Image 1 (cartoon, rainbow, N blue to C red):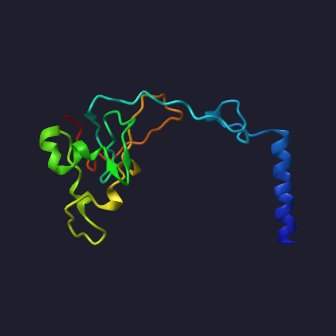
Image 2: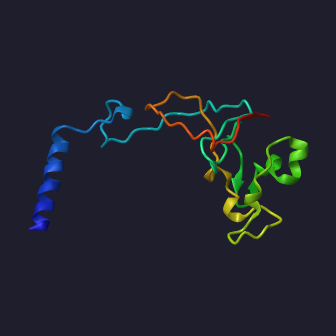
Length: 149
């Protein structure tokens, strides 16, 4: 009984999809069932202005271009400036001390392997129009202040 009901629902959805293809407002007239190319990016913000965080423990966004940066198991370009021992010269924000800790909280002399790939958490910004409205407002008491480098 249950299987026949599921089969009937699936059949109905397939028939409906073929009769009137779904269209998503962000995809424009392209049906959801069709493949689209992602929009080209390339206008990264490059002003070195550190943005205010919206909540505690939010990873800071990257305020400069990073295209072409090598970050792999052999080399991390970000550490050329952001490693703690290089920030006096580079004037970049140092990597957080939490990045030098292992899972048990022991302090390491090098970046923890679980924090080594920066772009897992930190993202560059693009000057693109919003696709959907966003009314999110972070808690002012929770956010770190914006600073100028």
